[in-house]
Length: 435
Image (tube, rainbow, N blue to C red):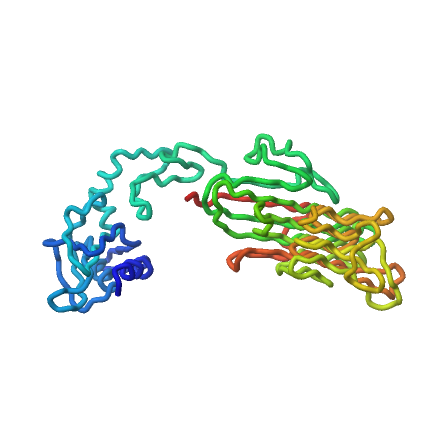
């Protein structure tokens, strides 16, 4: 096995080793220092033959005096040996080590924490606000480990941890155009234009995100309710300066579809996360925003808009009902006895995120879709738009509207269909760990 292979194996197999000895627990959290082709001479507790790298680390843990090991091939016997050492060395130099081809010297984290090295190396380091000095193995240097909300070389700079995006009290099918209501908050000064809110990631680190799609509009005459938006949650690593654009879904009006909530990378428009909006109420309650990428009820798939389809009767055209918009395509309408026609009368279909996300509308209709792709008297907006099923045999063309689909970047995220409170959508960012 190569020297580099041995180093890799140490970090992948020893990192979570735990051994109990003499009623006391000792841990190896990884080697603080590795020096290929070197060993520490004259400080051995014992030498073991035929050992493996993992068992060598375990044996060091089991021996209370062991703080470092020499692992490699003995030239005399051409066999792997493990030498347990009772002495550590300085992290700052290799003066105490001797050249030994085929060996690797390992200094373990516990050995460092109980030695005088930390005091010596941290003499010139001052950490404020609860921060502490430690040795960064990756950077091979002493530095401060800061506790949120503090950062900086000495943990001297206080940062904002929570960033809460809202609709800024915009209502209906159009989004906000002013950032005034963010004054005095961590989002003060961000760009808000045509409903799109553009934000620069403030620090590199792990963020927890929570998104909610908007509720579909209620139909008060029939006492039915619009579907609630989907809730999306998860963690993501973001780099300082990355530009994100957020579109916050707004509640449908008078039985309009709820808008989806979108967070995308501004550089290329690719989605980070999307929470689907709820479907509009009619003869039945609207469907909630969906956990999957596809919406419900004649939904669009793969970022497309929802469809409006008719079952029964001989209707060839419906005006005033539209599918929800998706990420890349608008909601559709029912024309010429077809479910997936481009809306020509009154923009009934909700606009896609790429087309601005304006809610569907018709001047002859009682409702309007919410900003974020909500369809007019129709499906919720989302990653893929919710569709509509119309009963062609009913006197009033009764309909059932679907919820919009959601998008998450990986399986570690969670999505709950209809998991959001009633009302408009939102997006929140919380800094969890700063790099």
